[in-house]
Image 1: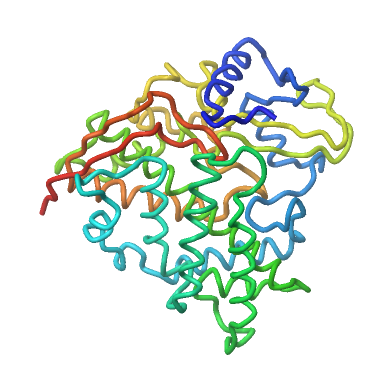
Image 2 (image 1 turned 90 degrees about the vertical axis):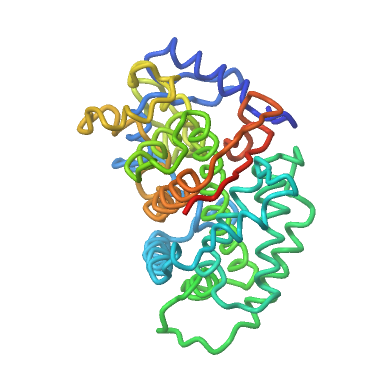
Length: 383
């Protein structure tokens, strides 16, 4: 409706300005209800009264989520899969940077972070699978996650190659044999094959694609932001401490939340902070506007990682910080995503000196909120 090749960032800024002039939810010009305060967002996401349809961005088929018991079981299994692998120990940063950099040592924005995270999580995505499955994972990351969800190469519909990739996944999943039903899952392939219910190979292929997007896409874009902002704000050098990177990651996700909006569908007529909501209506929660609200954050547009060392018990800030959502639709692997960002962020910024060049100054907002076009060069590996 309002997508264009240059992204949605001007719209996001406009909505932030509108939110500053309203005390509660309000309607955008095309009629969608926009929520930009932490308390209302929490009420919607946690939803103790059942005002909204059950939703999951990770375990759903089309717009239909799996039943709650299956989602809960799959979420727990996802955490067990990630915990079974020592991802930091198995990852070779130097070799990966060499592989992803061009001849001038540059890492291209809106791509390199996703490709690095794909390699970082490789043992948990398709553990020791044959070449065909891993080739399909790489093709999906390139043709869908990067091309559609980050860059926005197409305006309407999915990238034309995605159905073919899903068909390839379905074929390969239908050929996987030999795993006992009670055996632990070692990767995302095992996880989707183990989801109970009468699901076709095409259904399981779709679940696998959604898990790859959630694991690789959101975390990879956030990693680019962490490194870019770390370089720009002096969090770069051998003296950098892990606790500084922890604050850097949290501030990065505040100012530039990768998931810049969350959407919920009303299950019945009700009110949000006095505003009527009709059954079937879509409600847009502007994570970016909540994270950049002057009503909650001191100097909200300033990038200040040290703010996370102040007032750690501030309830209003906790309610208004939603980088991974909240409630049953919250990203089940948010803890592992944070650990990956903190580990890789410290490893890169501690060991390499960075240089950033931007072709544009504005962030790029599509499905994900990504850094501006340009590149980061990392040089001078330390001991």
